[in-house]
Image (tube, rainbow, N blue to C red; front, top):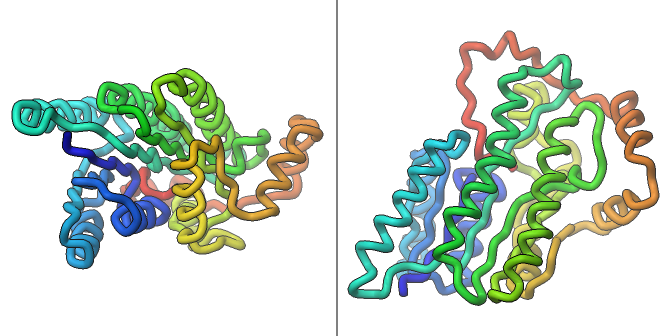
Length: 285
């Protein structure tokens, strides 16, 4: 069978780094990198294919923030499987990385309702749908990585919907891991804190160009891949992240939500100033 890896949100940030490291470290017949920004995807695919010419990195432009996008990805998988089923027994997904997602900074009543609803759709609904359409192609030893967040462990003021969506991703990943264990399929939740990606620029509507205290994504991604293939449930790269996740079991969520609302203000350009600006939302975990 043709063994493929599928990486969403792959046009920048951790998604791009996942593509680079998967190509370097693992033996897949094809790597599908999926996002909205086709030019970025083409550039990444060209760079990787030139250095690893025995691996075909395939750029796929899909808006995963809509159910039509999930249907399109499902159709592509079916088409590829049916094309190869007679000559190579079809395809299998050896690695699925759900990295597409975004966040918004600021109190709920000051942020765009549409943006918050789009966030739930992409971070939760689309991720769930992608896992579902991938299941027929997952085999023993296949790996699913879902990008959650350190924010998943507690409700956060000024980050309410994002933290809630990532709590969903973490909970869903743990339950899915339990259900798929007997089939030999591993499910892993990546739970990073601040990583240097375009996340903050999008979340703040341009008010914060870079993530505050962000670390480079290379080591975060490397640890995640290593732990995921070993069958570990989660990965938190920094000791600080592990400590905060552990401490969340002993602290009132109500208290944390209130304190972060009062004292952890997150800058955000008002949405009104961005009405004419179309922002690609899916690559910024």
